[in-house]
Length: 107
Length: 118
Image (cartoon, rainbow over all chains, first blue to last red; front, side, top):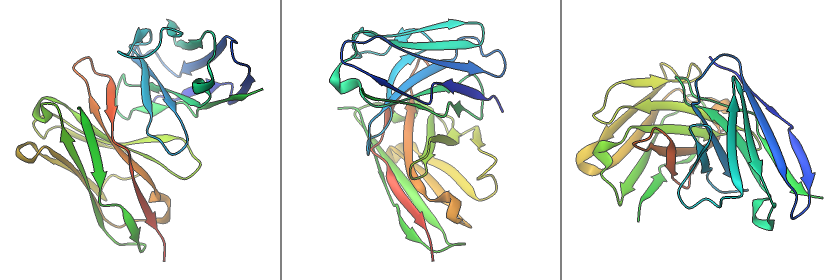
């Protein structure tokens, strides 16, 4: 199975900050990566698909990029509603695998 | 409104069985591939199973292979997960999710909790 490593595991940030989260795949997966936001007690929410495509309805402060097997989620101008846990997912092949998550909390 | 609603979770003893359902509405269910995911308390997300839009193919995580069976009834707009020989480590919130035409998991249900304990 493809392994997804994700860093950092947690970070503290302030409103207005720029935040970057990275995932690395254990092998080439084209650009078959999605990014999800999850708040406590809620289902995951799709933010980015195909590494860099913004899901409909998601604010443009969220962006994604890819370089080889490295994938990055960037949140510019962090807002109060962005404090949550973020997961990357490879949907290149089955079994789909997630990164372990990054918890973004308030500094 | 596009929606997925899971049901069927609950408390079950080890080695017991449970059948989860996922009711779809607001979209053409038969056109979409579907997946089950789960999340153990305080843990990350785990993919469990996949089913094609017409009912095949089906794929399973190694952790549930031989114990869980995914199925669907397109006439009833419903997805199912039959879980047998349940173990304590199957305790989790189970989510169903739709694959969009662009292959992203764009719609998720609210989840149903399964607790395996004696």
